[in-house]
Length: 78
Image 1 (cartoon, rainbow, N blue to C red):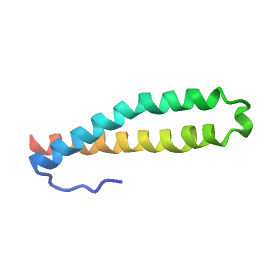
Image 2: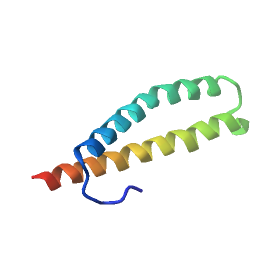
Image 3: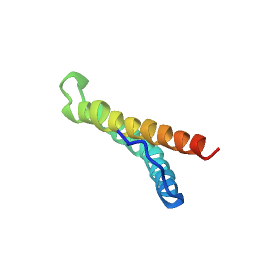
Image 4: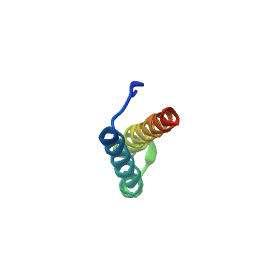
């Protein structure tokens, strides 16, 4: 979880870049998930579970945290 603090313009820009990269990762993760799904029985597919339950979830959590931090930083500028 990202800490609430005052941020410099550079830090905000870095967060915006990170957000963009993580959003781009959605497609790559979806492609990996599709490939894992094609490998057979999902109940026994550890690769599918790792991507779906771990990597995708973690990526979405980071996206939500970054969006929240950026929103709070913009609200603080007003």
